[in-house]
Amino acid sequence: MSTSHEPALREDLDADTYGEGHHGATDRQYIVIAVILGLITAGEVTLSYIDVGPIFLPALLIMMAAKFLMVVSFFMHLKFDNRIFSLMFYTGLVLAVGVYCAALATFHFFNP
Image 1: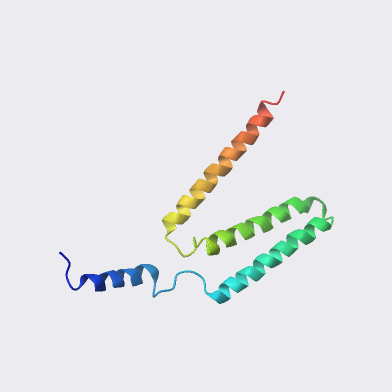
Image 2: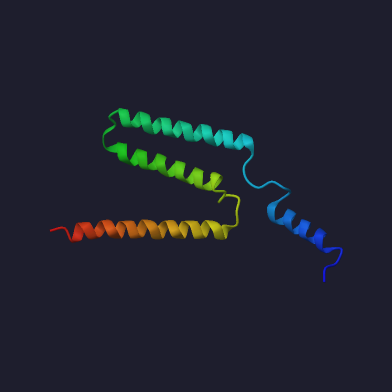
């Protein structure tokens, strides 16, 4: 049986769960993130045209990781969601990278 207080309780729970109707970054934050991602991409493209020697690959990997973390955090909303979703995502990521590295290692070990 439902009572007259049930809808009010659901609204309160939704407000507590999602926080006053705001879930995620603001429009201004998304613009700042887009500018940062654009600058990092410009840096990657610039780096591919100039000779920086042995720092080339580590620099590209660091910029790639920074872009990955920003996209995952803000556009996939992992920064604003429950921690269990982040744990599930990163667990799957680690497993996928581990399987990929294991597959690459088999080419190295079983190469005639």
